[in-house]
Image (tube, rainbow, N blue to C red; front, side, top):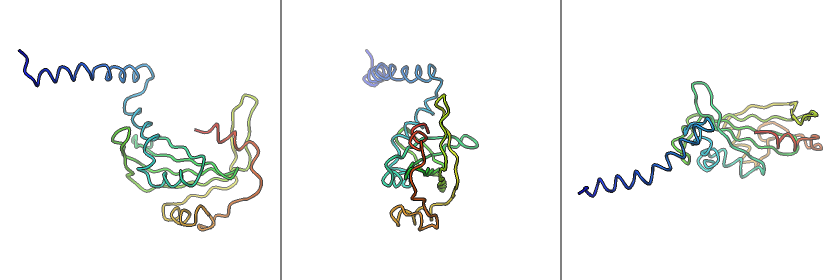
Length: 176
């Protein structure tokens, strides 16, 4: 007669095996590792754990999040917001991802604010943009922008309030 612990272990294995097989199939079929799957899932679920990303989400209607990989395969959190018909704001920060729902920043964020002057859409539908100004800043300046309720003038960057750049929405839609 099987011991109670052995029965529990066998039942657990029978229940968990199909789930493990699904993940393995996914990884093999789509060429992705469980590691990558966790990382992109964290990008979708981890906004609340990355304070600056959460602030960007609250401030901008079109804000997207994803993970890229830097030197030595360091995971980089990216938040990108499109606003005012001509601006792209990107925040990047190294993160340590523990699971699809848990992670933390391991460095200081950098912010990249770009003003788009021209968007080109070729006959094949490829979209590209030309930037007229770019401004790079850190978390101290970002705090000033947040405290000023999104006014970049607080860090000496005056936003262009002219009409939106033609095809800006197509650029934002095609990005990431």
